[in-house]
Length: 68
Image (cartoon, rainbow, N blue to C red; front, side, top):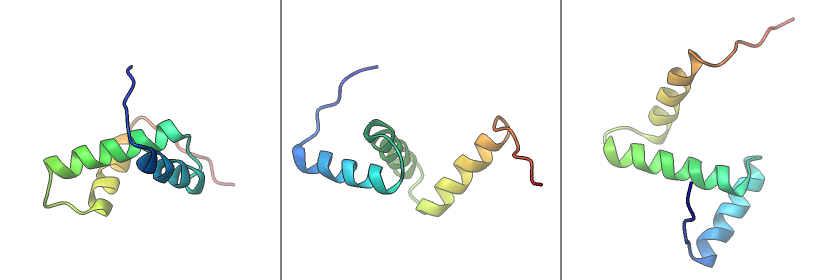
């Protein structure tokens, strides 16, 4: 784990988005970094494609919720 220095304006954007998305500031920044890294590595994919692929990849390790 490390410390990443970002400017105050970007930090404010992360803070606002984290509130809307119900994530911690660190989790929101990590989400944006991961999506950005994947988008850069896969420029033909849309944001929705990337999120769908990540959900599919996680589904194997995510417990299924019971529906009553």
